[in-house]
Image (tube, rainbow, N blue to C red):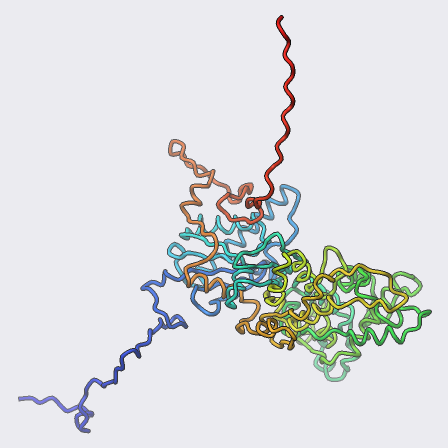
Length: 587
């Protein structure tokens, strides 16, 4: 009779048994799926969670509802970090058709990447929440819906306003939301979860203008160290002798984006320095040599500088900067403008505390025979003061980000101004810049300050924001990281009380919360979309070939606040009836 050898546990006198645990009533915790960082129970295939897509002109944020952050954030990347669309659309029909075809191809590529690469989800079993900007063109919304319904066959799409979702992410339903994105900055008042679209205000001073301003400043005031031709030259030739002006070829969109996101910051305004300089300047001197001009002069603003200085770069020689070495000093207007820009650069350099940064860049084609990469030297004052272009006003069509908020407050009813002024929310990718939100609060106080009429040189000007001056103690930004104490109880209770979400993902977090609560915007089902398609006609079972991009006539099922019914007002006037004409008596 054979015997089974004893196991090591049996030899040691250990009896295998199921471990006992103390079970306490009410201590059960729902265990989440290992693929989800939440504590709620999911269905077998996870189809209860909706796909939340925040499609920006450059950056997309995608993920599932009920989660605290997106699963993936990626650049749309048409030709390395460019924009999918812009504010300008071609007017020529052939050019517009080609532009729409390219946009549809890029959108379809991004949508397939969302489901098949970022989320690994089946689009036929997932409802979609589309975070839409209020000013997104309707033909782009129609393209997105056409791709999702026709190509990916999603069950339904819910369109929700990005401003409302951002406010929902911080637990509010009333507030004034400023979305500072890439193409434009938009301020939208929201009351009781109802966006007040007629009071919407926008400005093109946003991330795109900020990027172009950085590029111009680097071309004018930056420096570049090309790679040495030999290893001995790298040791023997000093870096100062190899310094040249910055070539335009190295400032690609990817390099500018890297500089903007990793190097730039927003500092305090130099109001005291402006006042000291103006006070010390005599009346008879040339103001361009002693002081910067007032910011209300549109011809001398940094926004004009960022748009108009590119024409001067091609005529420049190989000096460090055409501003420090003007090539044509005899020309009156150009020399005065260059002198003014140099005064601004010297003033910012004198008051700057940021250090210069050196980053490695790919050299131009003519310099790629050297040893290694080139070095781009970013002056510290450019890192600190490049964002000044966002806080400058003076132009009717290009208000500053602070003026956009104040203009929206002027348009809302009087009884809502105090409530909205004390519940301001800042969102968008540009608002992620360190120091942006505290500087914006300071600019709001600066714009509503009383005008200085003590000087005899000042002309009588229109006090634009005099009606908002009583609201100065009530200004409060919900996501202000450094709130300033105020005399208003309402402002102290709201300032800085929002959750610490980054401003760039607030709209997506609001969409995730709306999907988890089974709420959202206007939902369009695929059946309703198919019924509204004029091309889907069944005529004797003939196959109708649909072109890739037809001439866009957006369907009525796509929600659009610009074509909603007008509010009920006074009844229309009834035209008086003409008096009856006397009839002829007897023939």
